[in-house]
Image 1 (cartoon, one colour):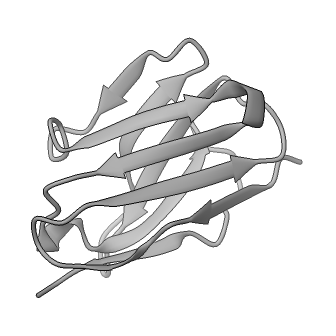
Image 2 (cartoon, rainbow, N blue to C red):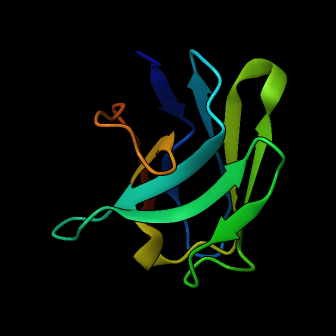
Length: 111
């Protein structure tokens, strides 16, 4: 099975930026970044196909950008103008998701 390893999270002040990375052990046609905040369901934040067609949740449009390096099976999430409500554990997965998840990476937006 394809392994998924997320990295790049951390603590950032409101208005700040972070870049998340996801390394997959194999090629996946459509990749997505998901997040789960405490007490909430996991949601799809952004997705990108192998041909770089992208989709975004309304809550992050204009602030987040997803990209990928097909040669390295890596997907990135560039997050700008971060808000406290972006605080969550962020996961990458196929879109639609596989039946397992990586460990995720914590993003905390707080002053």
